[in-house]
Each structure stands twice: as structure tokens, then as C-alpha cells.
Length: 199
Image 1 (cartoon, helix red, strand yellow):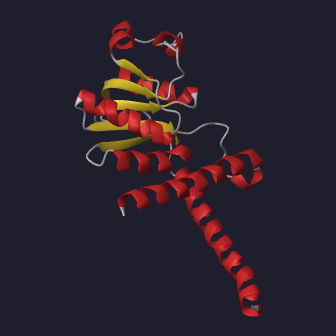
Image 2 (tube, one colour):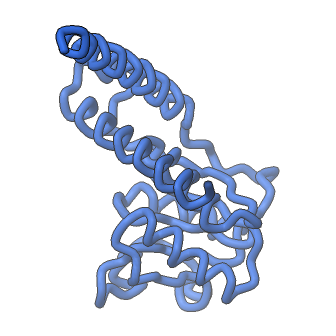
């Protein structure tokens, strides 16, 4: 009994060190996911998929579409009743693209839902490649779940870097620590989910 009592704090300490090591590695990974400029030599994919959660994501998706880097732009996780005009707003965009090549998905309420909703749309369009646009801190979990849902689809990450997420000195910013730590926990849980489903 005494051995078990002594072993418990040691186990908690080991788990804590492992969690912290994984967290720091996670921060390092997302810190390298920098937003890239759209250039003429950037090869196109069938689709551009934006996960809702920030205007910077939508702006990047629209930029990629206008630059011919995808046939259509699919926005997953849109609030019910919101139209393309309401979502895009006054952004200058070719009316033909606005009317024909921007598709809104209303069914997703989570990243898992985003993956399922996008999978159904990609199948309907017979697309086999996409650029996935979301925040850099959200990208590892998104890629994990999207690859699990669509193993035959080529998924290219197109991260955006929100100004309010300060990864270079995250330890000085409680808001960033809280956001990234919560995302890291969700990333770990997503790994467990994928492992269980595919084991």
C-alpha cells in the first residue's frame, strides 16, 4: 500500500513532464506554420476549403480562389441563414466567382463535423485535392481529422497566422497560453479518436 502511495506522485510527475514536453513540441510545430504569399508558381488544387473561425481565414480563401488556385471555394461550418453576400461582405471579388464558385456548408459544428461535411462535398464534386485554410494553431488537429476522413485526398495546408496569437513569446501572453494549451488537449483527444477508429 505504501509503495502504491509513493508511486502515485511519481507517476503524476512523469505524466506532467511528458505533457509539457509534448506541449512545447506542439507550440514549435505550429510556430513553423507561417502564412505563405499566393504566387503564380503555386500549383492549383481542385478545391479550397476554409474552416470558419476568423475573417483572416476567409480572406485567404478568397485570395486563393481569385488567383486561380482552386476550382471552387468551400466554407465549412457557416451559421444557418448566412448567405455568400453576408459572409463575403464588400470584399472586391469577381461576380462570377461570387455567384458560382463559393459554396457554403451549414452542417458542421466542430472540426470533426468540418471533416465530414467537406468529405461529402468533395465526393459530390469528384474532387481529389484541396487546400485547407485555417489558423496555424488549429491546423495539426484539422489535418489529422481530414486525413482520417479522406485518406485518398491530397490535402495541402494553407495556414493563416492570427495577430492575436503570439507564439514567438507565448509564455508572456496568458491568452495565447490558454488557447494553445486547450488546442493541444483537443489535438491529443483527436489522436486517440483516430487511433481507436483505425485500430
